[in-house]
Length: 116
Image 1 (cartoon, rainbow, N blue to C red):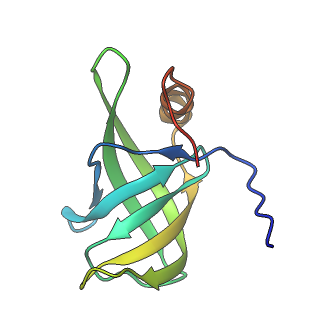
Image 2: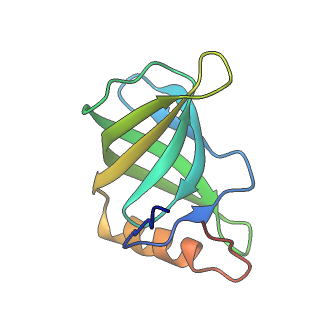
């Protein structure tokens, strides 16, 4: 049995949250789960392992207000998904403005959140 240890809780995402590459302004996939330090991206566009990216995505707070986040991310690993043209992608956030990091923390800790 393998025990897995993560420092940050990963919130499951039940809605479709699209992720855009800010350099190309194109959608590269959707979020599977997210933490304060990174996310699981279900990529629908080709990405390069160990590369750096600038991504944008939008969350909704408990009042339904849109929260726009822009993060610098390091692609740590890729694994082909069972659906053609998709890959599971593990990303670590390397740059996120303090105000947006605080908004992300509140979203993750919001009542009713489910964690992996």
